[in-house]
Length: 421
Image (cartoon, rainbow, N blue to C red; front, side, top):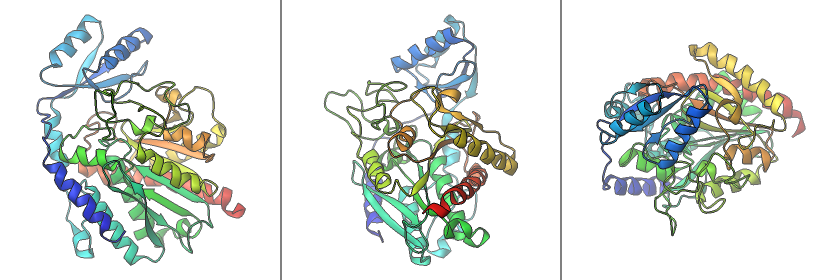
C-alpha cells in the first residue's frame, strides 16, 4: 500500500467536501412501541412508503426508532396518534449529537508515533490507512493488501496479522462499516486490531496460533459520504439505470437467498438489495478474498450498530443453521466476558430470533456458501440514547467489551482447529 491508497482516499475525501451537506438541524427521533403483530404490520407499511428514516427494524414486542425532518415530524406524530400507537422522544434534535461526534475527547498522542490514529475521535479512512502504513513498517508480522477498489475507486485494504506468513493457521476475519453511518463499527474494529498488535505481549497466543484479517471499511464510498456530506448515509453510492435513488444495501446484495425476505426491490429503500446478486463491487471484493481462504478462515465477524446484539445465521429463515448450538454456546460465553467489562447487556441469538428475517446478507453467505463454521454479526452500542450518533468517549469502552468477546472466540478457534491445520 505504502502511501498510494492514502493519496487516492485523500483526493476523494476532498472531492466529497465540495458536495452539498445535508443539514439535520431539527431532525427528531421517535421511539415507537410495537405491542402486537397488527402494530408491526402498520409500521412496516409506513416504512415501505419511504417517508421516514427507520433507524431500527420493526420488532413485535419491542420498539422501533424513526427519524423525521422538521417538515414531516408532524405527519409522523399524527400517523402514530391516528393508528393508536404509543411513542416517546428518543432524540429531540440529532444535529447537536452530530457536532459532539466531531470532538476529540483525548490527546492526539499518535501524531508523535508517525500517524494520527486514536480512539478518542472518529477518523476518516485516510487516517486509518496511514496507521496501517505505520503498523506495516513497525511490525514484521503485519502486511497490508488491497482486495480491490470500491465503485468510486477507493482502495479496500485488508490488514493481515500473520506470524510466519499467512495460511498456516486458523484465521479470524473481522470487517466493519458495511453500513456507512455506523461509525462505531470501524472505530471498534480498528481498536481491536490495535489491542491485538500493539499489545501483543499481553496475549501472544493470539498471533502465534491464529492469522487475522481486518477490513476497516466494507463500504468506503458510503463512509466518505457519511463523513463529508450526509451523516445518515447507509448504502453504497452506485446508481443503476432505471433506479430512482442512489445506493444499494451491500448487506442485502450477497447471492445466498438473495432478495427473498427482509430487503427491498425499491432503490429508495435503505435495504435495497440491488439489481442483481453481487452487483456491488465492494461485496464482490470481500467475497473473492474470503472465498480464496475459506479453508483457513474459521471465524467470520461483521461489526454493526446499534442495539447491543450478538447475531448468528440464519438470517433468511427461522430454521436453525448448521452448527447453531456451537455458535450459540460461543456467543453466550463471549457475552459473559463482554458483560464483565462494563456491565453492558447484549442479547444473543439468530437474526430472526432476535430481529427479523433478512436475506442476502454476508453473514448467511459466509456460512451457507463459504462454509465458515463460526459466523457472527455484533450490533454494538447503544440501545437508544444516541443510536448511530454514539459520542467519542464511548468508543474505547465499546471496543473493550467487544474485544473481551473476541478473546473468548479466539481461544475457541485455536483450541478447536489449531491441531487440524
